[in-house]
Length: 105
Length: 105
Image (cartoon, rainbow over all chains, first blue to last red):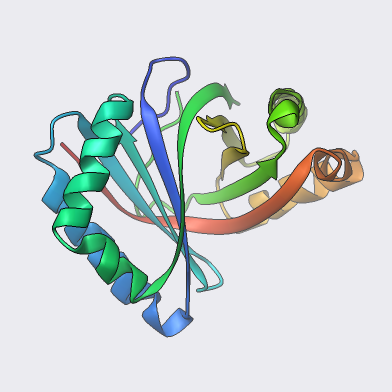
């Protein structure tokens, strides 16, 4: 399973999609398909797809080994038409992050 | 370290803060303090704090055992004044989620 560690150089793309509730499942299915598509891109690590309990959002939490890998993944998704297909289902708000701290019970 | 698993009942609060870059570190420090504060709330699991590479956002990825626990955490943070202190540093966009799929290389 994916895990979260601070200060390891991993770059995480957190992408929050705002959707109409009746399109939430369709977007989840598309993100799952696109994650399978980029599994073979060098440096890609994982994608974890989250649905909001209120039906209005989807979060994709996607890890790559470094910034260059994250960009390769985005480029591959764009070239294959996935970013455009995402846009037909929801409004994306993507960002690239690094983990600075994890706190556990 | 925190890990991500689908279909285990865990409720994840993903909170994206938009910040002025000069306040990013201050917000990170405050979120770290608030995570330490809620460690003892029943059902709280973890918090993972992420800084955007461009300096303009912070993401807190926080796990609780279930929806009731997630609400207890939010209530505890509000009562202790943390939500108000967060607002002084950035604009929060919180949501509650469940993990529906993880895909790994």
